[in-house]
Image 1 (tube, rainbow, N blue to C red):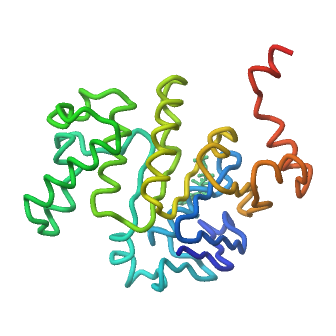
Image 2 (image 1 turned 180 degrees about the vertical axis):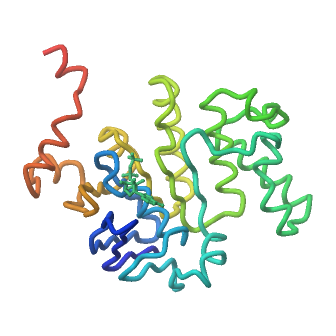
Length: 246
Ligand SMILES: Nc1ncnc2c1ncn2[C@@H]1O[C@H](COP(=O)(O)OP(=O)(O)OP(=O)(O)O)[C@@H](O)[C@H]1O
């Protein structure tokens, strides 16, 4: 469904992605994990056509992502960022329906879709009348998810969607996201710093360091067969409560 083949990128003469490849199949969920600044968001932005690689190719479905096709490709992708990325001057509902309205979706269809999505996102419908500033972080994130899903995209990209939330809300949203992913069966790429979250939400985890994917596999692979000392250090650095007590 999504394929990055040998992509690289430099900004201001500094290489931030070094010839990297990543494939995400239909219905497959991949987590991108790695230290701050290793290039996770840049890879997501390449899939969206917001960053065009210096070498290599990105394809979504059968379409190669270029400056010319980026807008068309973005219509097939839902994108969720930290804190929802909502427009502050629009109500939650107007945030969710904005692109559909601009695209001329009939009102009845739009209403039906919003009803489906409040159910999927686990959000009371009454909250949709509020502006983002009157919503909690978790509620904003649920609205962000609804907005990303409004046009029923084939691919869902989430860039640290739960990073700013407290642990209880985060755990609830993790559960609801997992259920939504299972129900929807879309290709998903989720960026996170949290190995537990990656293992819970994704089929496989791609560990990045310094602009490269150093290993991709299931969480057991990463623990039992780390490709190098960095992977073991990174996996081991995620302190569990049980470990802290011990
Ligand atoms: N448009 C840009 N111009 C210059 N440098 C950039 C640009 N975009 C990203 N970078 C740099 O590229 C590197 C990778 O950034 P990126 O945002 O992809 O990292 P990340 O792994 O997502 O980090 P974090 O986990 O902190 O969000 C960083 O050093 C960043 O400063």
